[in-house]
Image 1 (cartoon, rainbow, N blue to C red):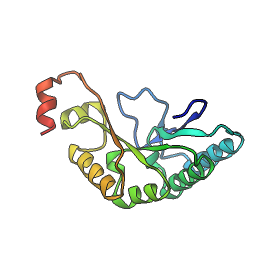
Image 2: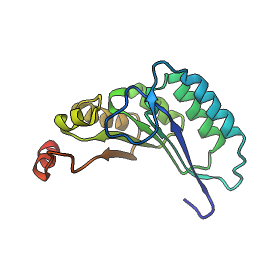
Image 3: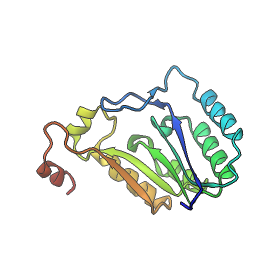
Image 4: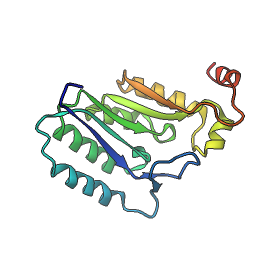
Length: 174
């Protein structure tokens, strides 16, 4: 990111369920109108004049991929069009909420980096954390991302959970 450029973070305050460890503001998407929130975010974005340009854009949460596709893609399209100076445009994805079609559409809309909320490759740790995916969902998400054309993929991982060990980590990575 160049000097003087702005970094843009858009927080999606929804997820399918609140994970036990999460300290970020989010609520389960059920019972809310996510389209209304996305429209408000877009309206707010339009009120800013970022003449210096945006170096990086990041849509996180919560879980952006819990949004209905039309809302997620509408927001991504608006960010990509309005802040087209971003050298890096990231969207956080939940491994249980991705498939190749969704990721291919994000890539087509100029997203060039994914942050996959893996957290752990060990099922007992995922259960402790309250995650709704399995270790194999992480691998499937990475494979789908590669097929969709992503070559910049980050995995969010949590280490040193109660009962975890270096040996357990190494075994789960095999």
